[in-house]
Length: 288
Image 1 (tube, helix red, strand yellow):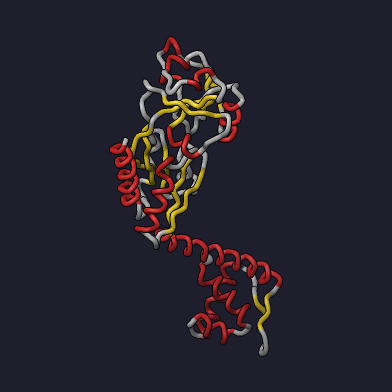
Image 2 (cartoon, helix red, strand yellow):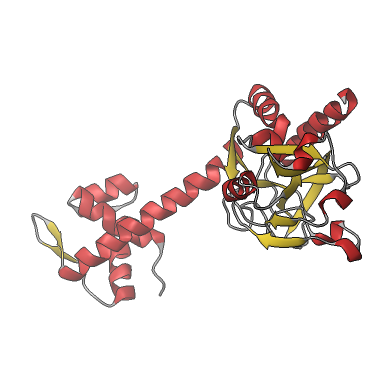
């Protein structure tokens, strides 16, 4: 016979209440049911767990060990139930480098005003799915195509592609640059989450690349003038750094901003988030 949660709850109740009678009252069952449940647990484990006298009930050595495990298991189950119950009351949106750029604050405020019962949390997770696969987020803002069939996604907007340069770089004096201006440079890229690849350039003029996995390191190296970067416009809004300037790349395709979610278990707020983000990006395009 398998050990069930009701067996563990019975054991803990007896230990906490001190008698079978009080345990029965706490559990809302008969004293006979408590005795049968404890006997079933002892049979399943093949050992005696409690010493019972006319005045008291005390755990055996094995009972002490099982009781400690039982408390941990029941506490974890309670946490699981609480987490599941709170799922619809909390919305975690993951992002890898930049959240929603200039729309981040407006999104937070509009969401709080329209849905005060659902707490919004923005979570930075530098992974390809911005925390979805890791269980750290319920929805994710990504700027690459989501190829994993476990997830679905929708494009909510477009962002300009910008070049990040040291402030004293000769190209920093221009208002914008072209891809050809950058073909001889070495780009610092995040292959897991970034949007920059050599394929943006013609095959005969593709630049060299070096890897990075952190936006702060990316900015530090660029500020020193050792490398350059290319990123979505949102990075410039979220990460302003002395010594780094951002310039639009006129002939580079814009970056699609996607919201991703679990295909078979979308958060209840998914459709509302897609609608709000789409409105924010569309309104910004109309004003541009």
